[in-house]
Image (tube, rainbow, N blue to C red; front, side, top):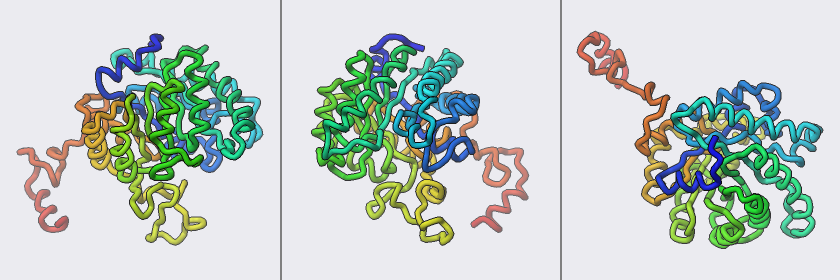
Length: 354
């Protein structure tokens, strides 16, 4: 693990940094945590499952091993009656990330701590909200600093007020900050602050990288990024969910599946989103669009699998360990073009697959 506090900035100056996220959704699909709660107890109960997913993302091209402490804060754990495991979970998550990073000396991935939205910030009572939220962030940041992370991701904030507090807490510890807002609205946060103004405030509070994550898929996040590009003087981040959102259904929580009548309450989020998953080529197109905007901090949030990250990395010109297994249909028995393939199998394409 790198200990220089400016190492993230050095990487960004050289080019794009890829940060794989989406651990919560992927581990829920694999049967290691519960949708709805989304509390990462898996860190303590099945640490090898967490490490394996870290490994898969680094093999696929992630430049960062992000500790799985999303939603591992005091409020969330209190809701499930497990506030007593908070410190142990936090420290274990960072230790797992560091151990995996050490397994990839050639890639030399960064290790990131993580704090997230608390869901208890009340914009009508900022003073009381900060009194509760700030200590929650302070203890998480303190544990991350003691462990020696390279930087801290502060993500999925819906209000400018809570985002500012997160930036301030991290910056006071002299740790680089990547701060991302969940863009549920096209132009403003839930406390009615424009994204431009929110980013200005967070940059003053110490953020090195500012951007958007979660809520929107590539199609509906990109227009906001295009607008923000000219307004943000620091490095810009883009980490959409990997779902096909649209102008009609711009965020993945309000997607509707007209082809299925058996989904509880008729709402695909969060457990029936499979029909909406973006393919690797859509991820590649989003990556190209971000490259054109000089967005230096890229990644994918809920719904992302390692193959999505590999597509992003390869679009950026990177050869990853997983690139050894990049698809090669030239060897397929029907669609291939190799001389030693049997011609009678190729007839299947003309006869049955048109």
